[in-house]
Length: 456
Image 1 (tube, rainbow, N blue to C red):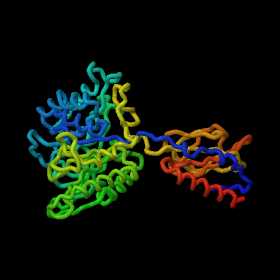
Image 2 (cartoon, rainbow, N blue to C red; image 1 turned 90 degrees about the vertical axis):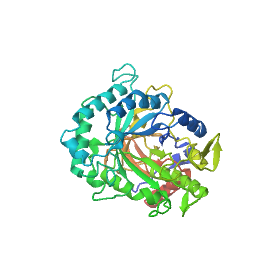
Image 3 (tube, rainbow, N blue to C red; image 1 turned 135 degrees about the vertical axis):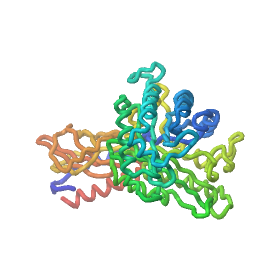
């Protein structure tokens, strides 16, 4: 707000090039569950040719079985990494062959699985260290670890026969064990992933393990349509809005990802409606942009119903022998999707890997003034008495009000807002624009100019 009623000089507004005020930033990571758990890269390569870019992240599932552990570290993770993708390991606390052990989290708490968990951590460390086996140099690899997902449902053994307290204890124990092996956040990111709705005796919040034990908050959710007797067609907001809001209440700083999503084509009864699925995929593309969801992983397998958007039983087009839904491919054609950096041996930057690159940039325009106040804000930049642009920022230290000197560090918002600053020798007004829609920036500027003159 403006607290000083002296006249503010707004001449600089006349030559600010608003059309160039924001640069596009690649922040979204394409991800997929496809390729038979990392065994069949041929399908992934065909999929990548169809899209025009490869998936940054490939989701896979593995159980708590020694044979599975050997396959994972000897073959599957290598196949995914050598394909130019980062594996997201869904670490399911099943026994060999998918056998279920209800109460398994209480068994972890009783140290029944200490030997297996320690061996898994050691194997993971060796794999992350790369070909030379030395962790901490240029050939290191990356991975995401999604432990015991959808715990707020009632269908997995880590939810059955164990309490949320057992789950939280087990998560902390495993996390600390791996952290003590020097598996830092530039190599391994932990995803705490819930189902989009609570099913059973406990809520997602009951299972919250705490910010210091989580790098990403994930959600699984599907448009099941009428493929089941109890289900109905839902749009993306109906599936995800509520849980996104709940996760944001748990942590305002952790990035949110959608680790499993898909849509059936059955919108009414057992009749396939390819157009309805196409439209749903388009809506989902808009939805993740509006919600600033950085990573989304499509469940590209016809399992319970016709989920697949490539290589499944249905599609609105063909790519060779693969049926495909072009709405999915079209979504990935914008320039805000991360692509592999061929000069980076770890494929993407640390910021992209950790989801700390935001979908908006902050832009500051400085104008000489005699105003002497500073509003609150949430991202860092530097004040100058000339026209400047502040690039992508991730700092979130809040400031309420202060007097600062020219070229001092201030804190700004990633939404359109106004800051005014001053010192004993020079003064300036800063306008912070949200990148993306130039017309909104112009409107914000116009409104701000009116406010200035009405207050003087």
